Length: 352
Image (cartoon, rainbow, N blue to C red; front, side, top):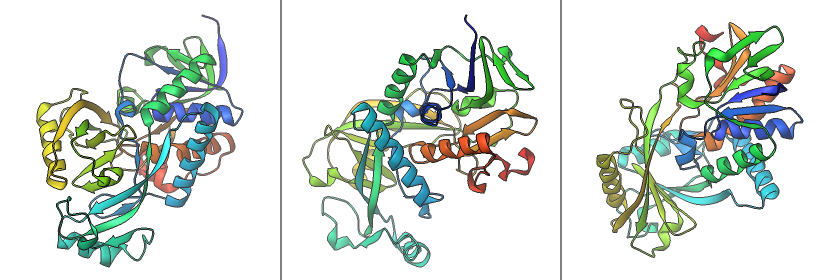
């Protein structure tokens, strides 16, 4: 093959790799992305929810203002360039599961997460099974599969995509960068999800991969509630075509991409416990999320090989964090700008 010299070699063509590649080109830097088209990944089946409040303790996004602002700018730029819609706001309604959860909200979070307002039970439609009320706020939905598909097509058209299985034995490091087969680059950045653990340099990375399963269902109702993003144990995400996404499950035992019928039954049962209507299963997907052990992104360079960098660990929050992290990663590698501690690899002593 003809030799190629570029600034960045990116491994992994899911959301992280594609967003990083696009951002590099927007900044005038060269890149080549290597990924196989034959393997699925978590990005392709992601729910794509940017939820500013998550978890049992109502945890906010880290650096929420800057993260959401970066996401809005990035997806707006894509929409303008490709004349497609990828990003939309959602009215979110998170229902309290019990009185203790409601009390936790008022004692710990209501005074700081002021963008969310309490919704008492009497103001919630009787079609929902609830008795403790909830909180209402704005969330966002990113069509991650469409973003990845569009950006991979754009990379291919611009000769920036090599559709091939990455094989570490062909990678070598030099004083000026990295060499991989016919490609030389100043930096190599691994954005290949949980499979980064198969890399000899990164096999001990503090990831906790989790299999997730997501359903697409036809809901037998015209209820206006299905225009909202509803959360209570599971989430119910309305899609523009009138369908409904239901999810998501977490499993740390079997890291494969095979959907399990028992999980589908469990998710539908939980969804119907919130909104008791008939739901017909249309599609059932599974993928493995590359979650960090502390549920925050991981950015940085390997302490023994500074030419090898990582942008990974997004878990279920890739749609939210990836645009911000792509900008931060470029600033770090190009100018030495420090990474925020919450997303830096060096927050773990063993990786300093």
